[in-house]
Figure 1 (tube, one colour):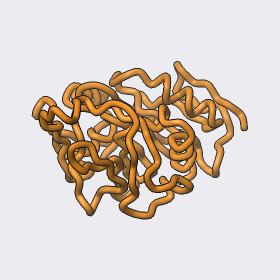
Figure 2 (cartoon, rainbow, N blue to C red):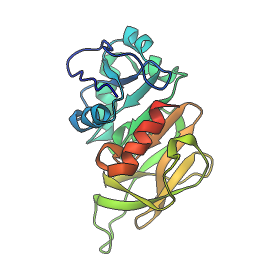
Figure 3 (cartoon, rainbow, N blue to C red):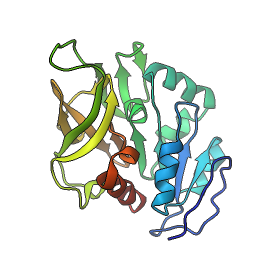
Length: 217
């Protein structure tokens, strides 16, 4: 596979793989995306950066990354002027960590209204002496529905988490679940929108499998 490196440009420089036009990473200043771009390069998945509305037309799939505070991330996303366009996307779109939380309606973090693409809430883990917050490290993920995003990923596979807030479990939208003091959505799915609370780019072989699967949706 041809590996493509794009750190400072929004132009795709490689022929698409898997029948698509590569992945556009929505760049809005919410966290370091180096580990994500490094993983895509290892996998030979072409990507570029989305900073302006016209950039969306260059790609067939999109990733919304994010780390840190959901309310602050939403504020940064609103400053880009891309929110209305994101809500209208009809191609596969994946939110990672805080990027997943942004897809929800509301977060207790900062008492923040979010994109409301998937009508569930992001809640704070309760104080519990048996479960440290943030939830940090490897935990098992169990599928709740069949979906090609998790193709060739066995039930109970371990993924890497770092978060203090979780997305409430809702059978209508939960794609996979994890338990950490409470059962919550490890991933969600609604139409063309997907979200994963864990970091696939830091989750070894199964994380890379998930990113490869997403590149072929």
